[in-house]
Length: 402
Ligand code: NDP
Image (tube, rainbow, N blue to C red):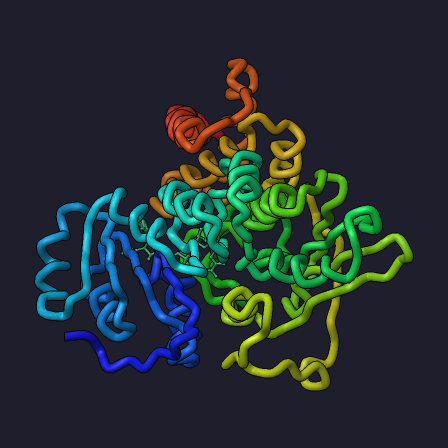
C-alpha cells in the first residue's frame, strides 16, 4: 500500500539525505508545500526510525535508509505493507544517494555526509549542499569530482547561496571579492574576558537563527564563519584574499559580490533556511516559497561592523588553515568538533575552543603531516587522526587558563 500522493508525470525526482534533521525538516516542509511537483526517491536518517518511516510513508518514497545497522528490523516493521524498500548501514545511505534522482539534498551532519554526497555527485545529479564537511574536509577533491561527473553543486547554506545568486551578475575576471555576512552571534559586543568564561546556555542563545546545538556554538565563537570562508573558497574557487567577512547583526543581507566596476550585488532575505533551500529546489527556476516577505521599512536599519579577529580567534585560524591548505582545513574542522564537544561536556571553557584548535593545527604542522588529499578515504583518515590529536591535547588545554 503506497500513500495517496498525486505526482505529475513530469515531476522532478528528489532524494533527501539527513531528512530527519533541521535542514531535512525545512526541505520536507518545502516539498510538502509543492505536492505533485516532486517525487521522492529516497530518504535517510541516522537512528530516528519513527521520523524516517513517517516521512517515507507521507511522501511515498521508493527507498528509506537508516545509518544505524541495528535499527533495520525496526524500520522494516514500521514500513511493513507499504511497498517502500529499506536498508541499513552506511552502504544503504550511499545506495539512497546513488539511486537515480534529479536533485539530492545533502544534509547529513558531520564527516559521515561525505561518501553519500559523493555518490550523488558521481552520477551527475544536482546536489543541494548543506553538509559543510564535504567542502571543509575534502573541498578540492569534492569539487573536482563534481566537475568530472558534470554534477551541479547548489549551495544550501544561506551565505553561499547568496553568493551563488549574486555571482551570476558578472564573470570570474570581473570579480574583485565576495563578502560573507555574520550576525556576530551572542558575544558580538562582549569583552574578551567575558567571552572566555561564557556558559553553554549563553553560547546557545543565537540572536537571529534557530539551528542545531553544534552550529549555534560555532556561531558564538565565529568558527562557523571561518568554516564558511573555507567553504566559499572551494565552492567558488576563490583565494582567502578574495573572501571578506562583514558583521551584520540583523542577518538580512547574507552575501555580496563586488565587481570591477565597483558595483556590489547583494542577496537579502529573512533569516529562514527555507529561502536558500527553496532557491536550490527550484533552480534554475524559482518556486513560490512559504517564508515571510522581507519588510525593510519595518526592520528600519541595517548595520555593519568589521569582524574582530582578536576576540574571535577562530576566524583568524580558519583563514590561516585555508592559506596553509594540504589538509589543514580538515584538521581545523576536526579539532573544532572535539573542542565543541568538550565545551558542551563542561571539560573546557568557551575561550579554550580556539586554543585547542590552534594547538592541534600547530602540532599537526610541526609533525610534518600536511599532504594533499586525493580521496574520500584520505580526508576521513586525516579527520580521524586530527580528532585523536585534539583529544590528546585536550587535558593540557583544559588546565591552562587564558
Ligand atoms: P541535524 O543534526 O539537525 O540533522 C542531521 C541529519 O543527519 C539527521 O537526519 C540525522 O539523522 C542524520 N545523520 C546524523 N549522523 C549521521 C550518520 N552518521 N549517518 C547518516 N546520517 C546521519 O543537522 P542540521 O540539519 O542542522 O545540519 C546538517 C548539515 O547542514 C550540517 O553539516 C550543518 O553544518 C549544515 N548546515 C546546517 C544549517 C542549519 O541551519 N541547521 C545551516 C547551514 C548548514 P537522525 O535524525 O536519525 O539523527
